[in-house]
View 1 (cartoon, rainbow, N blue to C red):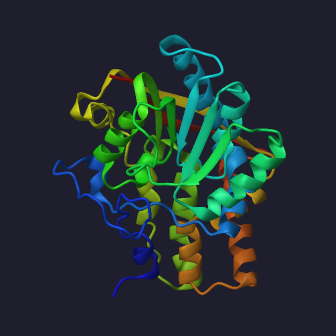
View 2 (view 1 turned 30 degrees about the vertical axis):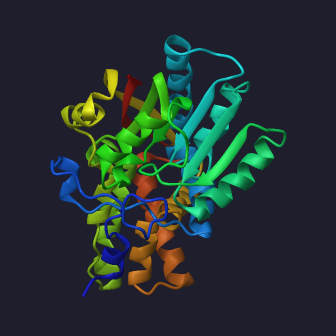
View 3 (view 1 turned 90 degrees about the horizontal axis):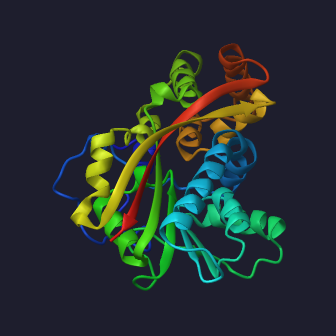
Length: 323
């Protein structure tokens, strides 16, 4: 019988609706296919924890970097002006979208998509406050493997920390190429190995250590899934799918991760993640257990990273021009 966590991590199929099967697994086996991968199923409450406690520390620096790279490469490769069209896949709670709207303020269209309605609901709230007068923004539930947009439509596509959860990755590359104009820019980020991202590695180790506290065997393997796409050669091969892109570059980027409150980050790590939340549900936790676990993780993070918390995170940016 499958555990609750294993059921959560059944492979996600590429389709506009997550329950509809389209296409099939690629015949080539990559390093990242050794583990099941699925798009995280965020409930709205989890998305709020993710946005407010997790996002500012882990994702904000990379949101700024992705936007910088997008603007730099669009300026070099495409054009600037009122007719630029910007696309974002896996927009989550809109952290990158916010910076894209600021940086591409004169773009005719900024289209941001995600599979999770819970994430998009939070994104709508956040972005309506930050950009109350934006008329060029569209938020859609859509899958990167089956996008409802015309061919040769966008000048730049940003895919931040989402490809790890797509099962048919070459199909996603084909679809991104299809919607990009010739010469259009793809900016895709994936995490480096978890051992080089200690802010994730330490909570994984911490949750494993909870077994002695809660008396239940806990499966921490799903924590590895976001960190399986860190091989440069495999990323280059993926970006070279069907010879659709050129000027391919893969670069490591290390940025600071800082938190004034390790406790808020601990809440974000535990309560803003479907994987961690499912583990907590597996131990039949209540508010008292929740508070105990948050406190223990806070103490662990403080011991390892200090208070205020300070460390670094490393990602790989894969960048290319559509042919």
